[in-house]
Length: 130
Image (cartoon, rainbow, N blue to C red):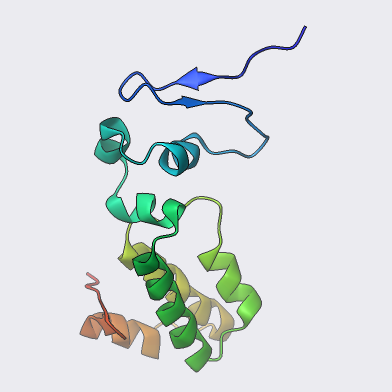
């Protein structure tokens, strides 16, 4: 006898099934039921947009890819950050992940990426870092 793996959100009534190893519940909920108020209360709009693959998120990722290339960061490393399974909660979190590649690669404390963060601008993306 095969067990059913269907789950239903108590808030939106959306159902998810056919789970695979490695599926992330928040990601699947955002993929199939982005309008859910429970999802929107617990995850950021940027998280949901990444799962949905919106043009705005794709543009941000492309700008960050170009920025990382300009710093000599390899495609493999950039793809590891941009294509991770768990989406980022904010643009700033994504940018920090890209900037950490340069820090890791060159083993420096303060870099040009950190300086760009301090200035609050990378292409059309504005950031603030404490």
